[in-house]
Amino acid sequence: MNDTESLGELTVEQRSATAEEIADAARAVYGLRAPINPSYWCRLVGVALRWQTQFEEGRYLRPVNEPPSIVIQEDQRGLRRSHFTVAHELGHHLVEETRRNAELRQYLTDRALRTLSRIATASTEEERLCDEIAGALLLPIETVRAVRQLDGRPCLSDLLDIASRHRTSYAATLVRFRRISGINMTYALCERGRRKDTEEDVWFVVDRQELGLQLPVNAWLRPILSTDDERSGDRRKGHRGYAMWFAPTTQECIVVWTDWERLPGGRYAVLVMQAPSEAYTLRMKGTREYRPEPCPCDIKTNPD
Image (cartoon, rainbow, N blue to C red):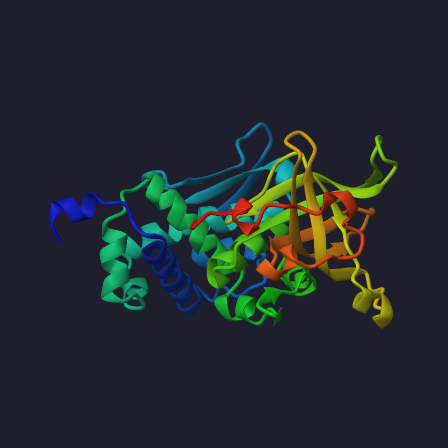
């Protein structure tokens, strides 16, 4: 490997494959088994876990002549979000241990070892790798691949169930799923309300996370029930089907495919995916004046 290669930025595939191998090595050597138990996992790898007030979200410390430790903000204790933070900081410990520990290194392929040798300590590239390690530790690849897909689209109910069972946040779960599946989507958190101008019932997007699918911001959603949906009498807490994604500021309106579930407290978790091209020629019930003229090229896709 020459110096030029060692300075090059890693590809997503290189980073992801190395993270999977490090997570597998940690499971084999230390017995880290999902779902996460932060204090137990830290004890297994020989790291002290401390919670402190007035501290940044998380940090891995390895002082000279002292045991390594992970410090997490006290306000995050017990929250699912903190589990990803702990797993990320454990990733730093595992990376450092893999550099030093022959027992861990024996579980890595030559390709993973070469990739690891290109990553400088405390670099941006190491931060990205530790994000991947955290995902691999919290949600093993076989768990994510077990998510049902209907017509090539994931079931949101399965993803939310995995998040609950593995004590991970919805965001971390969806990011991990997208990384493994390659499906472009946007995750939106919505509240049901009424438009002031038309008195129409819609879902206002109060938070969102783009996972490869770019959609207009400041938007609301209006689900569309097809005739088949109404005949089936399917009134479960979630629903899969078309919806209108409308951005009042820019007057952009796009037909999207959604899968949604009602959350405790009345909000809705909505997985938004690109609608098939035929959706733009169908006269679906309820579209009225919002039926878009543009074709699917209005939806931009991020490769990563």
